Amino acid sequence: MKASDYIAHFIKSKGCTSVFELSGGMITHILDSLHQIGGIEIVTMHHEQGASFAADGYARAKGLPGIALATSGPGATNLLTGIGSCHFDSVPGIFITGQVNMHEQKGDRAIRQLGFQETDIVSMAIPITKKCYRLTSATQLPEVLDEAFHIAMSGRPGPVLIDIPMNVQRELIEIEEVLSSPQHIPEPSPVPENSISELIDAIQKSERPLILAGRGIRASETIELFQAFYETVQLPVMTSLLGLDAISYTHPLRVGFLGAYGNRWVNMAIGESDFILVLGSRLDIRQTGSDVGFFEKDRTIFHVDCEAGELNNRLKHTNVLHADLKDFFPAILHQCETHNFEPKSAWFQRIAELREANSDVKELGDLQGKINPNRFMHALSKRSAGLASAYTADVGNHQMWSAQSLELTNDQLFITSGGMGAMGHALPAAIGIYFANKKPNVMIAGDGGFQLNMQELQTIFRNQIPIKMVVINNKNLGMIRQFQDSYFDSRYQSTFWGYSPPDFEKVSLAYGIDAATISEESETEAALERMWEQPDRPFLLQVMVGSYVNAYPKIAFGKPMTEMEPDFKPLEMEGT
Image (tube, rainbow, N blue to C red; front, top):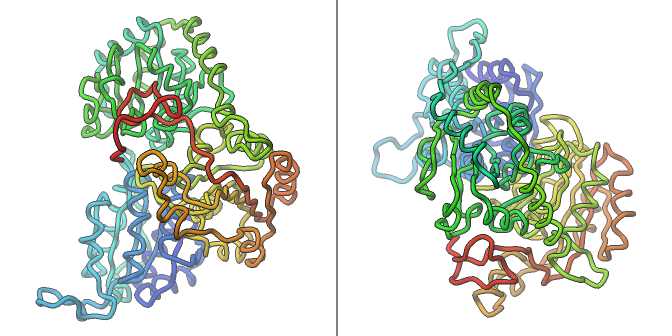
């Protein structure tokens, strides 16, 4: 069997239904094999970064590794941002790069390059992958591919890169068919019973408890177990940015979104809490604020994570449980069977009071009939319920308005580039999500981020992908402009000055995609009706918001997370 044929058969045997790529000379054998063997959709993107982000979105929606292909040199290096996004956000991915023929590689020669587009992508990718492979023989393929899929999916999921020279791709393997290896199902790891007992005891003794739900719950595919757990122990649930879809918006135990731009009432509730159980969240600065001493003070914290290095990392005084959530939830649910848990009624009432007094739609004040982004997100959610399978948010102020105010249902995903924070992620990720589930989804981007991968509108048009694209256009890079107001006396270099967006309605129409623009709040309802008029067709809605509308609340940097802008001013310039 030709090596490239083996690759295609192997991908198909693992249930991966799509691959994302931009053609180049060093992957032509693999593309030809994928085409001839069939059964896998080959999605041609218009930039390799778009292919890597699409693979990221596909993996988050499908629960299988996303697969992206690129040729050597610039094709391979263009994958790196998407690989990094998968790495930081625990997303399984298989990234296959073509490489020049082995006899064209420089080897140990004291030169920069021998073959055209020869580039050592493996050395570049090692820090942002779980493992990299540099193949030298087709005989390595069966073992490498099998191991790569296992590594990508096991433990804390993440990306793997396989670099394959062109001459290796066309070699013959002495094998008649792809041997479908059994799925790697790890044995459950025991969770110490005494640790579980201590946690249950702490839950029952607490008066003002909270659960912090992170992406680890979705990454470990334990959403249903998590629901069984929080409904058993009757604890209120707050979420990180990447954990936003761990609990539905309307669930009575949901509190809201915490962190640097979190819902004000949530951060205030943290300040009053006496117990926090952290599940699958690494507690980075966007979640705790820079004052970690305040986050730890006067409360008991239990932290459960599958990666030992994340435990007592930024916070130093938590009770740690080094466990995969796949093992943790069955263990604690088993012990919970012998305990009774009563809802903390007074605490729920207090949280309700904080929420009522600190509504997200009131943070920006009276905008004189102009569009309030938080209010728009609520309207978007209501109109998209039962239609949108997922929301993707790009990076910027719109991302925070989305996290603060989207009303996610049980069956909707929320996907965004968290750890990497990559502008340009949302549009191609939305493409990947569609190929994972073949259902419409909603993409939300700012005018800045949308322009980074706007070329993928052609991918959407060519495939008639039913993505409803919402572009929040404030005619500047709003999150950085807000930063410049705080720390640079409103000198708007490269956010207003030297920057401009196009009219995205006209751009969309030029690509053959229907579009509309609104600038008044009174236009919202009709525009959303038009957007969903044909659920199976793409549509772009440009939403004009004021150039100086900020993302509030925001933790005043250096202060406790209960002290948020604009009511409090930061002590120092943000370093992250």
